[in-house]
Length: 549
Image 1 (cartoon, rainbow, N blue to C red):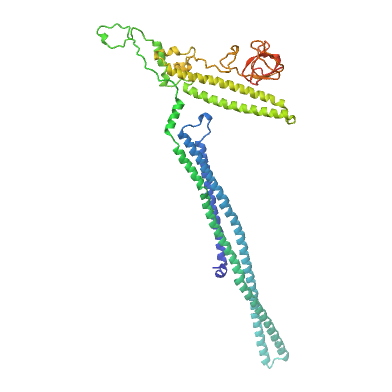
Image 2 (image 1 turned 90 degrees about the vertical axis):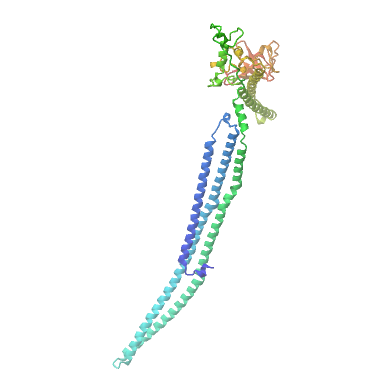
């Protein structure tokens, strides 16, 4: 069917229909816009929800329980799901809403053009009809005037009283009117013929073409709606695989919940390492009471003539009160001796691991600086090798400090592990607990006094890099700076250290006013060198951070 032939006389209705089509398209575009706004709001609310239940945490607060890890995995998957909803909103805005709004503007411009062409054709046809109608009316008027002139001429011609001049005048008037009527007739015939031709052209060529253009436009609008309907669904279908993976991730996280693992983590987190307390001894306070013979039958435990030590027993009871009540607060010591043995061992191991990672970074930085220094020495135009020496010395000093810290924490860790072994093999009766308490270490309310990790600690196994007797300390002294040898020194006296010119050493003890400075080589060897033989640079945070030459 064609609008041009079947609807040749329905210009106004087609005008209304095409306007309705554009309005419907814009209504659907508005629907898509509101839908994508819902998606955007939904995604934003999901992200806020994830952010609310997954707050920022410090490293020590990281969850370890499988139930917590699974929950945070679900939150991550939900965050990815929210991202897919944002993708849906973005694609709808670009592929559907934006396309519809651009197409709507094009349709409006095209419809306006076609309707203007149709109105122009109608106006031209109306103009032709008016010209034909005017010529027709003129022809009718001229014919009436000619008829009047003919009646007047015939009346005067039959009147015997009329003069010849009057008859001739009436005859001339009749001839003029007849001629004018013939001209009007010809003009009317021409206008009628022209109008009929224009009318045929209007209804058989111009209007059908315009209506066909409107029909094509409306059909394209319908096709575009179908395409956007499909795009609307394809946007959703495109993210379904990823959303399915998010849901599968949530299911996997749910399967990873392990109640036995969580229970073991609770044990690892709160295990103190203490042995369970022994039985409380019976304290007989009635020994000094004189009993009769009959009262002697009352069963009283005998102590073989020895009195119990109330001080020891009371002390034992006092030491373990916190097991069943509120645990007393202990000072936060550097060696973590305020913690139970098992917790202390874990914290020390964590600290050693962190220090080891920092040491590895410093070593990598030192190696990189040495390589750069070698490049500068081979290619002086690239840079001054001496400019890297302060940074190298600082890095070496930091490495020495970290090694010292690691050694110190390893010593404490060895004490904890040694105390743990001894507590298992050398467990004493409960009445002898106070004999093992360290002097000057009694905690308030007697807490932790039965912890073997707080006993007098035996020194750890000797380190293979142990210093001479003169420098025999529990821990190596930390480096407080570095120095560069200005001259060679043979170190022939006892306690002195051999050094070569330009050798870099660690400063571990400043000059006390006697002209000697205590230093350490990179190999670990320590000794004294003359202060005037070296150029000393102390760390900024050290006291008296100056340079001696």
